[in-house]
Length: 56
Image 1 (tube, rainbow, N blue to C red):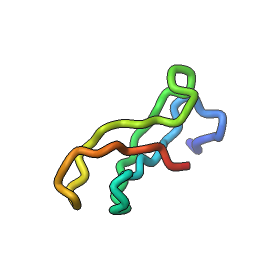
Image 2: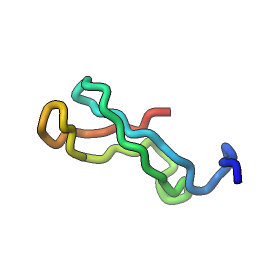
Image 3: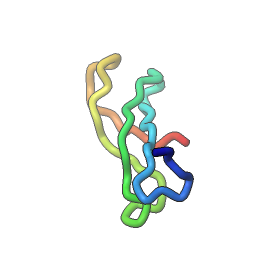
């Protein structure tokens, strides 16, 4: 099963805003969150919670 670009729940990559290059991979519902996702998650490189923005 291949993921289409029109998939309702695409796989997105969340990149740290701390500039460390650390990423999380998650899925999002495109109907509920049409714009880019911003989540506050733990970055183990800087050892603190920072904002992670969706990277396409």
